[in-house]
Length: 450
Image 1 (cartoon, rainbow, N blue to C red):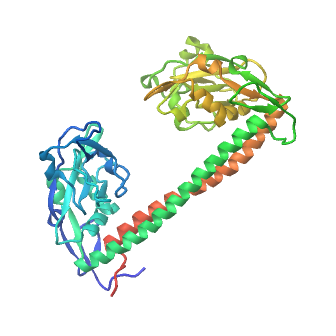
Image 2 (cartoon, rainbow, N blue to C red):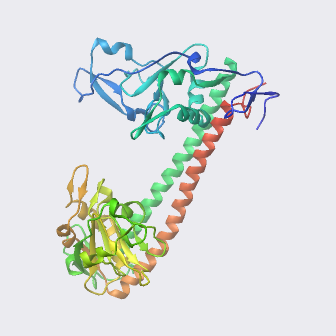
Image 3 (tube, rainbow, N blue to C red):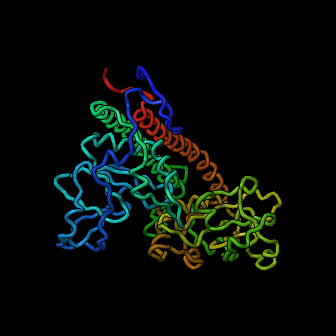
């Protein structure tokens, strides 16, 4: 990339050298107004309402992808109508979200009004409005914003005065326009590549689900005779397979009720529902697991919570429907003890079976959907022992369970490798975008003509 012909010291530690002909001025110089939004209450939609911004408006940082609420139209709202080029700035939020910005442009003459918890920055004529947006998007300015944010309980805040005093760079106006045009085009290209990788991830995830669904309900042999399962939503299964309810395969018990206050440094390991939802969604190898520990006396309090190889541990609650039925297969205990903790249901096999096969069966779309239809909840979804008892799964002979488990282990590992590769590419592209914005708006690289 090109460099400018000469540089000068900015005398700002976090900025370093800048192009010799650029200026440094306070941010307030570039905006004719910085102000809070209307405090009008948001209500449900009806004929006399208008769209109004919410704090979630810029949670993604994506331009013109606003999440809006609605407020009753009054004359008092008129001064809060957004105009083209206005920048919305998140000034009261978690520290990681403070400083998020989005720039408003009308779409098909749709209007939007400025609501609470977002500052409205109205660009003046001395700087190009798009350049100001890209400046505020740059990581180096974001770090500076975080440094002036005042911490509070679960959030941080940036005052209007401290924001106005923030130092930013001012290239000549013509250069600002060229820089903005360049970043508009280049970041759009990067965003397009990110979306393609995300689409690939979605396709691979669907492929994985379809593979699991087919194999655990139809088997590996396409020529095997089929029979009606007797269950409408399941359809036909191999003629030599059975369908079983989990109550004939497992004995269920609740986990130990343990709080974070009862975690200790040296004790017996305990797996809680949060560990399953966030880290161990399929199989737990105790040798590699990082889990909290609790007092050994809990073993005597509830022996049914001592876990063994091939046990399944379910989460009994989930914050979304997709997490309902999440569970983990216990493996490689190697003589160590492990307990089932808070908001879990212990499932101990009462017949000989392959727990990995059962776990795959529970992941299949058709069986998972049957579970989701039984759970209750709105914001938190609960699954009970009664629901689990009546969950129906396909049940091949033991040898075939092992073959299917081994096959799916191999095939899903290949798909997961491709998914992880695509996810890594997304992160690389995001980092490249941040670096590009940063280097361009601070003059580390030259993208203008002349």
